[in-house]
Image (tube, rainbow, N blue to C red):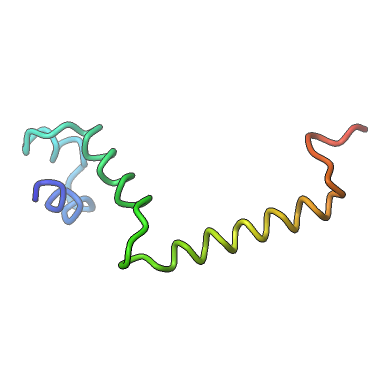
Length: 74
C-alpha cells in the first residue's frame, strides 16, 4: 500500500522524501519496482514476445558478424 502511494505521487514529491515520511527504505522501494518490472505474468504477455524478438535480433547481428566476437582489430 505504501509503495503504491509512493508510485502514484512520484511526480509530485521526491521518492526519498516520501520514503522517509512513510518510514520505508528507498532501496526497498527500488527493489520492489525492479521486481515488478521483471515479473512476467498473465498481465504482461508482451514481455515474452519482446524478449523473444530481442533474442532473434541478437542472433541476427551475431550471424551478420560471421560468428566473430569482441572489438574488431584495426
